Length: 169
Image: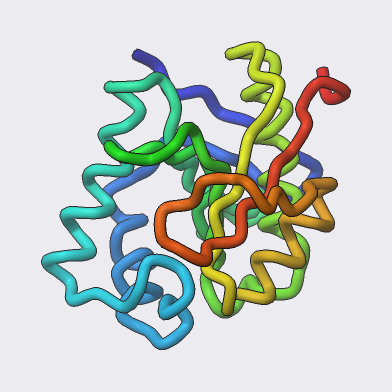
């Protein structure tokens, strides 16, 4: 399968590259990851990252590496995740510390939502967010999602934000 490349005004969303893992491992070794998937040692981070990348082959979607169009600098990862046991495809993201607060995650997430609607015909996507991750909850709502109190998360207490994709494409 071929992983698509998406473009926004400022960003390129492309297939994950091996060198992306260094940024991923650094992020998940830092306290910033506590409300994402939790802090991880490098070996555990490799297993999770490689599994996420493998979703592309198994499901036809997965995480995009996100870089700036003008410089090619890596800023994070945005995509659709669905490890075994998940209630369905989930829109997720993270950006490296230097890229926080610049709107990159929102811009990339919108592009992924449109791509998912056009390519899979999905009516909805969700975010599954740790209740203490106020920044991600705010982003999910800013993207037009609504909190679904009956939504199924990964862990008890997760905030599930539902996105209606029907108006996107």
